[in-house]
Every structure is written in structure tokens, then in C-alpha cells.
Amino acid sequence: MPGRRHVMDGIGRRYEKAVDTLMSPLASMVSVPREEDFGIDFYCQPKISIGARVETVTELAAIQVKGGDETLSYGGVDERGDWRKHEFAWLTSLAVPLYLAQVSRDCRIVELFSLAPLWRLFIGQNLYPFEVTFSTQPASKANGWTEMPPTRRPGENWGDGQRSTLDLGPPILGLSVDDPNDDDFRRNMVKVLRTWIGQDRLNQMRFLQSIPALAAFTGWRTSSIEGMGSRVWQYWSAEPGANLERLCQTAEPLLVNLGIHLKSQNDHGAYAFIPILKWLSERHQLGGIGAGLLEQLVRTHGKGLGPAEPEGSAQSGVEVSPSPENDETETT
Image (cartoon, rainbow, N blue to C red; front, side):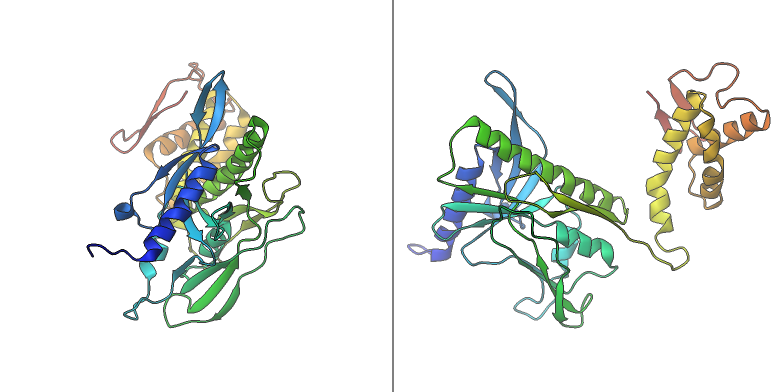
């Protein structure tokens, strides 16, 4: 409307400017234009020194900014009473870890929180949650905090039907206008940020590959990587056939490539791959290169030879599938 704007527009911009100002010494901060904002306010890449007066950027992360007492939530119903399922579909499609930046009302403090507990929720159940809200803990100088299970209360008849509150714990990073302006401080903050991005990115890569496993930090001090607690979760189903096709599709290239390495190095450990390659073949999950590897291993094993062919095929090169139109790869 000409001559007017809602006051929240200006407040939101001040919160985002605070994040940009306090994080720019640590990372390259690329602001997402408001008309292109689908739930991410910044893309962030930590800065590292690679020489005198030269720096580069590393891992990529995304940041959603909230200010004052505003909380972050996903799902629930919109003003028309429709379930916001699309928000969970969007979250599970992300290829970079997403972080919550909480800005104090006076814009003097920015605290960064990892959304890792959300991915544990996604991996641990087949249905989208109906609604997820996040709670946070104050900045901590001790490692006493440990991850808490979500609290749940009945929701509406969509997804899992539950309104879940996930405790994100204390901030992983705390920044203030009063922080020291020196290289040692910046290096430590970048180290903390990179440690978290590396762990959270690994979990998202596994999620996108349909690997139901998660490794997460479960205890930490704000702005520190000393004494961090960690834990690994593995999820499985007792239902016959459940998840097997997706897991086979993820595991087959890795198993075949490892088998080719062992065969080419004349390592007898390659023969341990015969049963699993046969099992993949029986499930029609073994590609042409894998079928060729299986054939070679069975033949040399039957002759009492080492895995490498007598003609000296242990050289690095190209393994060609019996059906090259299906798959062909280069080993180095």
C-alpha cells in the first residue's frame, strides 16, 4: 500500500541484518531475496584462511531467522484448515542442513541452533508428523544438557496425528556485538560451525539415500567442540521386504566398487563378496558391472586362484559391464 508498510516488515529486516552483521566475519552470507524466500533467509559458507591475506569458503548451510520470542514450527493447519504437508515435503528434499538463528529483541545477540532432532523424527517413522514446534535452551558453558525425546499431544487426523515439540538444546553457536574482534575468536567459531555442518550434512546425505541411520551430537557447550557427546541410531523394520529395495540401490554401487578394488589388488577378501553379490543378483538389484565382477570372482575362486586374473588385470582402468548400455564406470 503506497505510504504504508506493516511494522513487522521492518522488524524482520533488522533481525536478518543482525544475523548478517554478526556472522559475516565467520562465513560468506548470501541473503535470499524476500520474493524468493521459501523458508531460507541465508545461505552460509564458513570462511577459512588458505594463506597470507587469502581465504576460501567451505561447507554450505542454510539459515532461517527468527527474532524475539518468535518460534519456529512446521506443519499444522493453515487459515483454511488445510494441513501444511508441503512444509515437510520441502524439508525432506533439502540437500543442505538448515539452522535456526534466534535473534534477541535488541539485535545484540544471535544464537544458532541445529535442527538435527527433526531428522531423527523423520528417519524414525514412516509418516510425516502432523505438526512440529521447536523449543530451545539457554546458552550453556557446561556439557550437562542431553538430548530429550519429543513431547507429544494429540493433533488432527493428518500424518502421525501428533503435535510434537522438539527440544533443540542450547545454541551451538552464540554471537554478540560484544565479542572480541580477533583472529583466534573467529577461528574457534568457524571450527564449531564447520563441525556441526559436517555432521548434519552427513545425516542429510544418508536420509536422501534412504539409509535409516543417524549420528548426532547429544551434549555440548555453546561455541565449543570440547567434550561433545555423540550417539548413533539405527532404524529397521521387521516387516519382510520393507526398505530393502531402496537400501539395495544405495549399497550396490559401494559394494561393487569395493569388490573391484579388492579383486584388482588380488586381495582374497574379495571372495567374501560372492554371497552378497549373488543375493543382490537374485533380487534383480545387481547392475552389469556387478554381474561381471561376480562372474570373475566365482571363476577364479573355483580355480583356486587369487581374485586378480592371471593375465594381470589388476591394473587400474575401466571395468566394462557385460551390458554397457546399463552401467559403465572408471576405477582409479
